[in-house]
Image 1: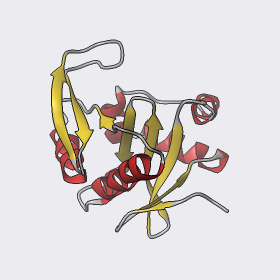
Image 2: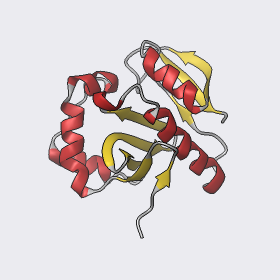
Image 3: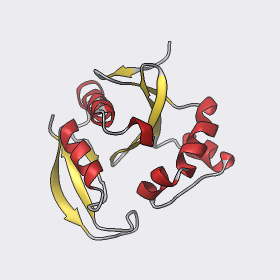
Length: 154
């Protein structure tokens, strides 16, 4: 039986080998890549990313149609929606569903996100999902610009 989590507007399912080409294409879209430090991936690189032991990769779906990617890693969540799926509350819905799952069912004491401070849309979306700003940080090994540490409070 496939593991799936549901929000009100979205569902999340594990990403698998059948999603590799889709994820490569999504990351190649400049309107996605700009939020991920302009990273793009080859098919082989994406296969390696999906095989990482410390990261869970999820596909966000709206009514069964793939519209985004969410990853769970030891530090928290990362997510993007394809441009055509933005602005309808899908991102906050998916993030809230995953955060609740991690806290309620997996026993995580804390779920965080780290959007760039310049990405007002992402910061607002995380806030709508139930995350609050904890602190702001300067660029470091994992961030090319100022970033905001946010924690899920429900």
